[in-house]
Length: 112
Image (cartoon, rainbow, N blue to C red; front, side, top):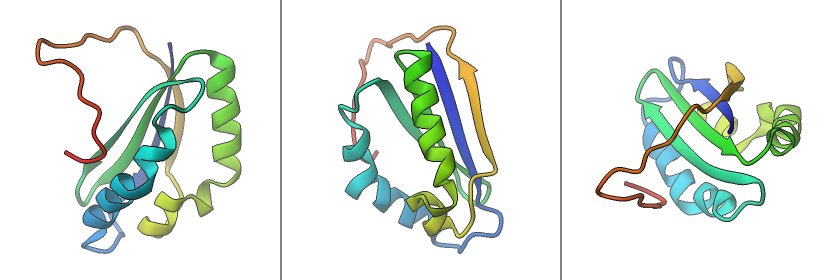
C-alpha cells in the first residue's frame, strides 16, 4: 500500500495550537477524508510543542500521486498551515508493509 506523511513543525507555533488543530480535525478535516475515493485511511498525530502530522494510506500509487500533487501545490495555504502559521516541513512518500487490527477493533472517530 502507498503511504504519505505530511508533517508540520510546532516549535514556533502558538501555545494553544494543539487544541485548535484538534478542533479543526473534529469539525471539518475528519469529515473531508471519511469516504474519500482512493484513500484507505488517514490518521492525525501530534506531539505537542514538536510536530503535527497527517499519515495517509492510499489504495494505489496513482491515488497517492494525485493527492500529493494537489496538496503540495497548496500546502502553504492548507488549513493546517494556516492554523500552525507555517507550511509543512515534510511531505514524504512511504510504503506500508502491513496493518494489523487488534482485538479491540478499529474505531473511526473525529476526536479521541
